Each structure stands twice: as C-alpha cells, then as structure tokens.
Length: 242
Image 1 (cartoon, rainbow, N blue to C red):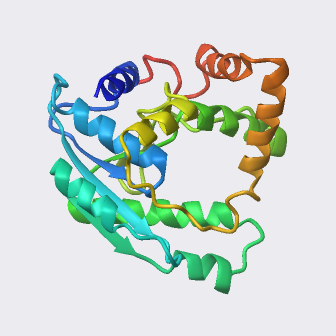
Image 2: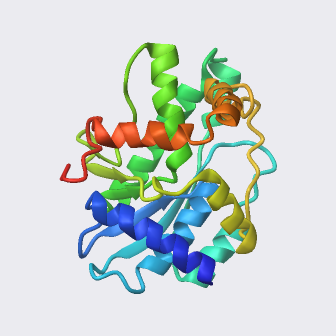
C-alpha cells in the first residue's frame, strides 16, 4: 500500500500543477488493459478518497477485436473498486488490418480508438478523459516529432477537444515507465496482453530503442528532454496553462 501511496502523491502533484480535476468532475479512465492504464485507474481511485476536490471515477475499455484479449479480470477489478466499467466491442482491428491494410496502422487505430472513447463519454455525459501517458511517453513523442516530422512538438498535459467537448488529461506525466511497471507487478494487476502485430514494429518502438541506447552514454537524457519541454515551455506545458 505504501508504494501506491507514494505513487498517488506523484499523480496528485501533476494533477495540481496542471489543474486537471475540479470539484464535481466525473473522470473516465481509458483502460486498454495494459499496465499504464490499470495503474492510472488504481492511483486515481486512491486519490479520490482524500483529494480536496471531490470527483467520481469510471472506467471504459474499447475492445479492438483481437482474439485472446480477455477483459473479464479487469471487470472484476473494477467491481472490487466500486468503479463503473463500460466495455465497448468494435471492429477496429478488422478495419485497420484486414480492410484498409494500412501502411501506418498505429495512426488510424489511435484515431479510431480515441473517437470511440469520446463517443462513449458523450453517451454517458462525461467530459473528462484520463489517459495513461507517462514521462517516457512524453519524451518519446517529442523525439518522434523531431526525428520524423522535423517539428518541436508533444501532446499537452491537458487538451480540450472542441469537436467532442471532452478534456483529455494525463495525470501520470511525472511517473516513469519503470516505476509504473514495478507498481503493476506489486499490485498484481490483471494485465491484458496486446497481440497487435505492430507492437514492436512501430516508429515509437524505434525511438524507444534509440533513447535506450543513448541513455547508456547520457543517463539523464530523458530528464533533460522532459525538463526542456517544461522550461521552454511547449504549448500547454506551462504550469499556469489553465
């Protein structure tokens, strides 16, 4: 429990710095079944027990249509936490891989998943969506934009989607992937493995490997990149952004 307490403190600092949650909010966690979203669910569930701005919590899973992904244990976990859980079956896998046969399937898949999530939130009257992006995701996204697009860019801690009226928040930006993985293991969370064939063939995976190689020579490389994002700051990364 101490590990979860410490981790939730890190989440609270990020939530406070970027004014992610207001009193009376209902926050939906997009639960993919991976370690990141499940740890985020646990941390926000713990945070809501003492946060000075009371909020409600729900969980939503967009099932992509891959065989072998069993979300029943996730449903059991949500029942134990007393968190309402919605599962939506989709044909995203069939459209992306079988019909469209995309050269860059990750981009289309992400757009379709995000669209399905926003539709689900609108149906439930929820306007705040918590995503499991963390410290390493931010650093990798920054390098992806720089290396492949020639742009200095990254997603924002808080993003308003004007077309859907949904606020996207990323409360785990101060937490590294290793710490998240260790907590998921210690809490024995029901991880749902993703059989997507692009899991180790994407540009993000290439950048992840690049960072891993460079960090052997420059151990604080990730921290320096993340600090640069905040100090510039990139759009939306100033702590007085809202």
